[in-house]
Image (cartoon, rainbow, N blue to C red; front, side, top):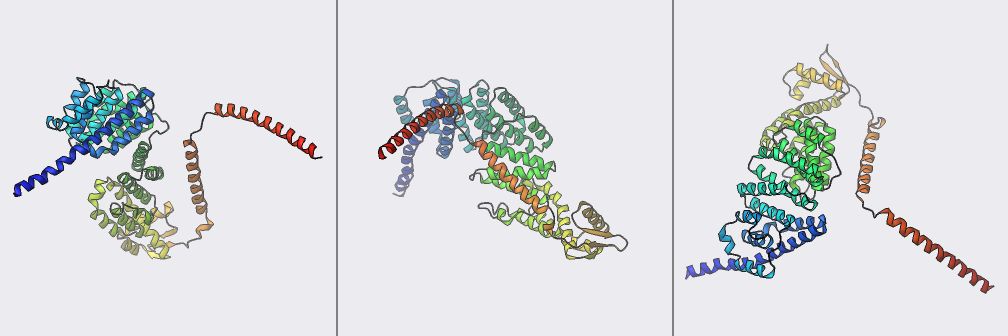
Length: 484
């Protein structure tokens, strides 16, 4: 009896599968119809909408549903259908025999458009990646890229950009990203010749990611500087470009430009891209510390980022205090985290900033202090190191003091009023410039109807208005005469 009960309990979930699968299949058929309409009408926005709808169905995809969709969409005996069907086991195909039969009865096999064929490659590819079948995903993506090389249609560009992204992702997940660098360069060259700007954006970001994964920052900068520039078409790709550019500028010691790029990337990124915004904030925090700034506490308390930014919060606290020993302990404690984030080399650069911050605090607290005490407070190895560090800080203008070599001490000058300097004016000017730039970008993003229609309609309306005004004036004049 117990076995019968167990078998009934196990059989109950299987009855719910056919009820959910046909709905997913029907959604995919509607998406295919939308892509077909967009291809015939040459409307890219419909294909963009189809991709958004597909990503919403991503978790509901199953092998049986995809095999039925391939049988519905692709022509029988075609190369794409046989190749894509080979990625699904035959056992899963028998689960949807009834559904495939009904779908075949409802609509005959269509002539497969290039857009629908590439969409099928894209659909199977994301399913294989979600199932962690990376070797099969690599084969599927390579076949899709080979098929794309023979297509030059603007309605395919949106699907091609997504296929490029997942093509690179497959090789990145298997640690073989260097193998496709030549293919990505060739695809970028083809996209440039075909004036596929969205493809150029996507491939440029993939190439920059490829170079940065192997610390090839010089080659990444050469490619970026020589790549054609145009107005961004995708907000996600533009955010990625700003992030990679910020990393390149950070390695090149151009911290001011790096800070602007990283903060702009974090600001423009969608709210759902939490991991991307966390990475942008990590690099932005390090860059601001290298610039001598202390990030606000609210940055570390953003929703969903508290745990990820905790190591950087403790690091910022050590830099703010200027305690070299605390800085070393934090760097050792979270060394694995900093290595995985690839910020360990930047944190090594922060040592000098920690010493300079501690020295600035000493110069504010003491009007006269010996170099021996400076070495003890900063926990330096020798007095000679303290003397050289103090001399360099005075030369760079980090502290306002003088060095007495004869008596071995540092003499600090009185701190002046900061509002008597031009620093508040410069800060206010930078904020005004930022607001004006944001306003100009918003104005450029606006869309207006053609001016020719406005002028024609304006002339006709102006003529009608003048006639109405003349008739109204005559009518008023006649009424005035009647009253008198």
